[in-house]
Length: 394
Image (cartoon, rainbow, N blue to C red; front, side, top):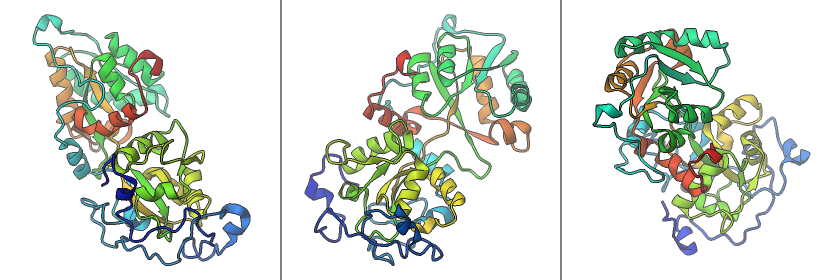
């Protein structure tokens, strides 16, 4: 991948030819949309002044041999169908292992989780232990019933009673743990650094689906037949779409990661438009309103499922970020050691498959979190976007 300080000439090294101009001739979407659509969408005004598609893809980097464990994005692009067929939409346990093996020992932004105090007089020993989570679509009582197997296990392992408490927001989780009124809780991906930096939270475990998948990916996409785009480095020569300013996967994450990996800096050498959402980006790229852009993998999956005339193979994927982790279960750093060990046993050494907790409220399996490595990209995005870990930003 290109160094973020690469020169403009260096950024063109992956191209097989030099673009004659940044203005590309308009063409119909033949070869990109299903045959039944023909040129109707473009005629309806959805085609716009799109980049010049060449019918059958002639991108020399386009590969039909996709290895999910090593996509080798520096040398390969892939049609979207291979992403779907190889279950690359979400992260796998292999990805999770790679995320944990980055070799980092310090947080790239903010602080690391606090160490457990050596002095027992600094420990807190609450009884009941308060376990908190946001309310789900089910009623609060229904969700509490689904949590019951986990609550019973946590009580048995810690030797203390456990009280389930619903909270109104993830900001309230941070505030509650900071004031030691909440002791163990579910956090969201994005507010986990707030918990670590503000509330003494230690991320413990992340849930994994029964098939080993987790989270989602950030994909950098273009139309299948747009051969001139072979890398994210090429996005600044075309009509790129981000989704919304506040979107993590649609704007904040790609703004940071495109800068880090490809030298594309918003407001300097890269000026994407805002489409208004992931579905708008997917449709716009397919129909020619836009040429390229970042998109959440599970979002484009939902759009493809919902729109009859768009398929995975209408898109070419030129890069994918490491999967973003699911929100973890975390605990207050200065809990009594028996409580911490009980929480570890409950989440890390218990198979919840076939239980109402594992199937409805939580996950069948939990794996241990290494915050410094697993949350590296999340912290990097927040650093790039100038996020400050304080009450004003909660």
